[in-house]
Image (tube, rainbow, N blue to C red; front, side, top):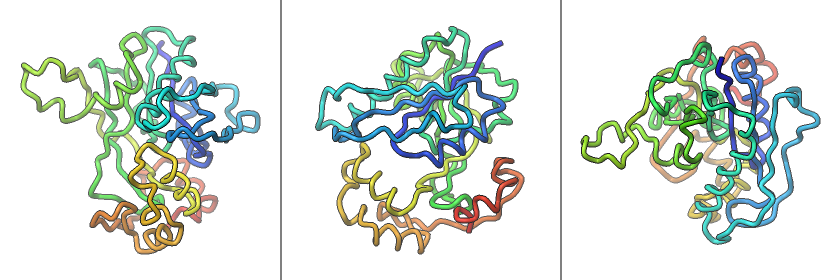
Length: 267
């Protein structure tokens, strides 16, 4: 039977990573967490993931990218290099095992993973997107093309699977053979809990991740971020207001069973 390897790149998202482990534990065989000692802008950072104190440490593979990025001033290239380091943790995977890749806040639906069969080379999980809070719905960017999946034997590159395996490829004419089209669309594919961080953590993220255009204070200032959260507004000055919704049976069971624990993250 094929095993499932759930892979993420990690910066400091301990809350979201631990939520992910709780939600997916019954369906995932190994969690692979790839962390770098540099942020995507090439600055040195400390290791933030605490493996020893994690409830699921026996099935977590913590990979550390400990080399300087080859292009300090190319954040996108640095992001890609960190992603490819995930291969170091996939040496124990067999060819028919499944490899999922997500950002930490893109959580696939465990009900979909139960008895999962991939019929194409790649799969894209379509996920509902929420911002700041579990029940602050971003209807403008849902469904979100989040988690990707393929069999280990078909995995060319983690960054390729993320950047080139796209829903829009399926609308390309047949003669564009350079566009990846062997893609299975996975409906009801989970949740993208975007920017579920404290204002201080969001500010750090904006100043260190690959989208360098958002490092400016007009986006990353903590007071600006707090105002956006309070007004349910978008971080990036797009004309978007998020919508409060009720928690229902479409949410992960773990969240529904622990509402009191997650009180801060529910409106």
